[in-house]
Image 1: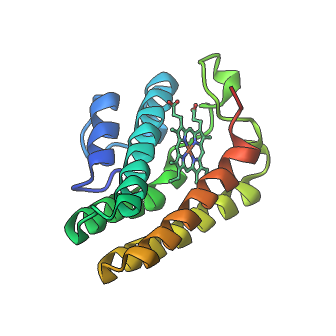
Image 2: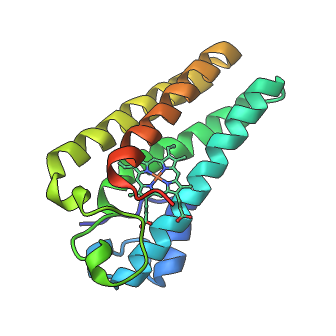
Amino acid sequence: MSVLGRGSVFAVAFAAVLGVGMVASAQQAAPADVIAARQQAMKALGGEMKAIGDGAKAGSLTKADATARAARIGEVANQMGSWFPAGTGPDSGIKTAALPAIWEKPADYKTAIGEFRAAAAKLVAAAETGDNAAIQAAHGDVGKSCGGCHRPFRQRN
Ligand code: HEC
């Protein structure tokens, strides 16, 4: 399965960390590389979220910036299902905050990704309207969907 879309900074980061081409499969990569790549991509995702949130709050977010960042979040939402292949959990022996529940409760995990995808799609639509209040509301819902997955599936520090 090809997991890395074209033109995404996340895909580029993911591919760069994995040291593979844009058509590589996370399933074929070493667990340590997959874990490092997804952690880096999650961090970038956090950066996009913060930039939209801060910019919208300050009233300084341009429509171009909002649409570009929302589009990248939307791409990540579509890719995330492939970031946790079997063998990249805590029993890999590699440091990861991914909880075994991801693989033990795949249906729940899929639901969490689905909620993120739906919220991200709404953020993309809100960004395209250029309406600051709509962007803030959609951004808040995306944030909730991040937490909706982190609570059951990510280990707290
Ligand atoms: C479907 C589940 C899921 C969704 C949705 C999700 N995350 Fe995560 N996130 C995880 C898991 C699991 C980890 C732990 C990854 C690891 O350590 O291997 C993580 C880790 C992180 C990290 C820490 C990365 C590091 O430095 O190790 C950040 C930051 C983060 N997520 C931000 C976000 C943001 C922001 C969103 C929403 C826009 C989001 N995540 C949505 C599951 C999710």
